[in-house]
Every structure is written in structure tokens, then in C-alpha cells.
Image (cartoon, rainbow, N blue to C red):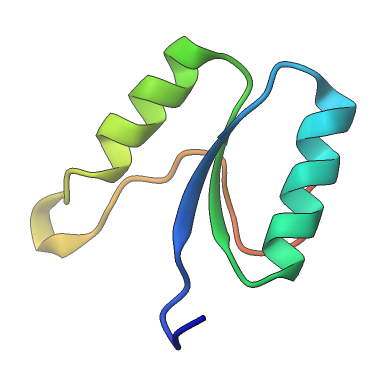
Length: 68
């Protein structure tokens, strides 16, 4: 993996599975956008791909470490 962390969108409706996957992926160095359904995942992806004023991106259940 490169120095810049890759960002993944994790969409899973089961809490235990979502937490397990998020913990493992973040431990591997990925930055995550986490959602519990397709609708929220799509909105999260859309919001995160559009910079706000000043170049900041909106947050959406973003994790860089263990979840839960």
C-alpha cells in the first residue's frame, strides 16, 4: 500500500459483520466510509466525493480506526 490511505465505502446491514469488517479493514490501513444500507451508502459516497468550500470534504461515519 502507498503512503496515502485508500478510502473504501463499506455498506453492510448487519451490525456485527459491519463492525468486524470495519475493524479489520481499518487495521490494514484503509480509511472507511461506513453505512448500514444502500441508500445511506450512496448518499455517503456522494457527499464525500464533493469538496466543500475551503476544500474540506463532509464527514459520513468515516473511520480511521476500530469501529464499535
